[in-house]
Length: 245
Length: 260
Image 1: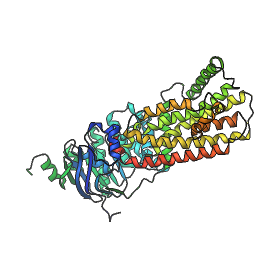
Image 2 (image 1 turned 90 degrees about the horizontal axis):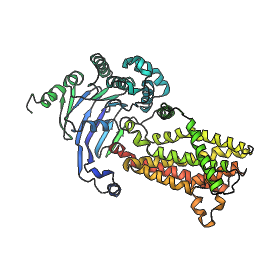
Image 3 (image 1 turned 180 degrees about the vertical axis):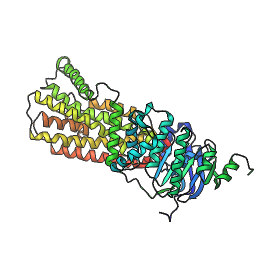
Image 4 (image 1 turned 180 degrees about the horizontal axis):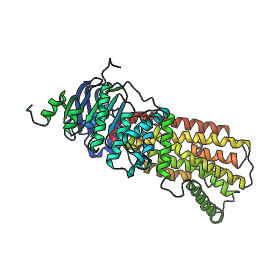
């Protein structure tokens, strides 16, 4: 496993059609007959980088710079239009709040469903369940439907599932915004443990203090292009405009 | 253009399927007072209405009309409901598809399988009514699960295919609902196959839903096994539909994330 990089992007582009009529029949028929996307818009353009195991990397950029698109490619949820994406290892992604939780199911039911979607067996899930519940600190609410949870609680449960299923690569998209101080401290602890275990982490956040603390490297995306790749402190300093480029 | 993952999804299909089925039940029934009662009530209401119409308004002279019409309603209901629910299943589960990587085919299939419990309850209801109408059980009844199994394969194929199309063209479920309305008349539900003029027989021969209805009547009301040709045709069309459904799904699933 160590012989291959954890994540390898080479010349990756991802396009979306800008036209609003893409759901109309005509544009599909044109698509099936090989016509090009109309008015294409590059969410990512020619992005290349390599991530080794045990690196934790911050992804920086303004809204719409392509951060979420990049994470969805790493998570294997979408496919690139150009270039290659190689991922070595099992990925757990915490994309936005609630990562596929259903509001009508209880905490426990959601955890089980999520674990099975991530590919865990029944036995492994039963083993991990107490740890997940314990780490989340949801306590008696775990048997209540998720719609009764606060956004902080949903995030805690989601994070707890993602870190406890023992992934090789962990993706965190803006998850630190809602947790309280105490839980954030626990997350940080867990993530540092994670790094020590040789895992890879990709992290999107607008809180630079968090990124300074958790990541050692940063990728800066701007309009779908990778404009800077380097040590986290340097990239953040330039990104925030404190040091001229 | 390539995407290579060292770890392909190699999870526990049974556990995943169980959890998806449980989710369907919980989401559907937790806030309902009558719960499974609906799967008994709705075909009975329909049966009563059709029996009233075709006994007193347009008398058909069909003996045991309630059992006769229920033989049509039960397989048709399962088919129509599963097809519609399967079609909207991917869009309805977009929150899962956009956040976790797992075999997407399992979503429409589990939605159809969740409907099987209603199908089973309704078949039990049908058998009870058949017994009440004075028929006695026979070995031929063993054909019921076989024929129902073919119908399941057929509707799974349609659900897989149309759920993928629905991601791209969201009006797909109106198309499916209209098709179901047409099928209600084009499947011999409240009339018998024998009254259909010869020249229209071909229209019915390759329709698996019609075949299932006819097989149910052969077994339960005529007391004989379904014809071999009917069974072969049913098996062939069902497997073919399932195969085509999977192929269409495979072809379309690449861009699910972008369109959901």
